[in-house]
Image (cartoon, rainbow, N blue to C red):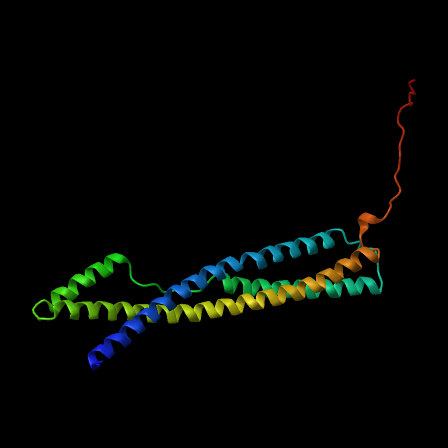
Length: 203
């Protein structure tokens, strides 16, 4: 195999690798976007649980269980806040790079043929220049997108980590809420019946 043939073979392999990496990172971006739905649903559910407990908390009660409840509630809310912060960083603010649109490559291909048309091997030179430019864009954009995907995946990992911690504290707070008499809905309150008119019994 001649030197030119080896060079062409290496260039073809490099082009194929850059192309695969580019579309791989685009696919990873879509998968990360799909994975954002689960922590969002978990976060909303836990906020609903904490809101329910806060709304129905009997604030006339005092004692150790109330302090334990407040402690678990505080830690759960704090972890939800941290999870929300990293969720926002995973969902927004990331920039992706893409190859130029089709009209750019159509014009660039015409420019390559026009530039090399006076040479004997114009077709080969134009093709190599076109593939080199496209390979360069594939490599540059795939590298930038890989960094963006890694950062988003890391933020998503932290989101799930903090939501899991928040869920543990929320579950313990819920158990204390129900089994230590902090739920004001479960307490029986006297019902006052006021009769303002005679009661008629019918057979």
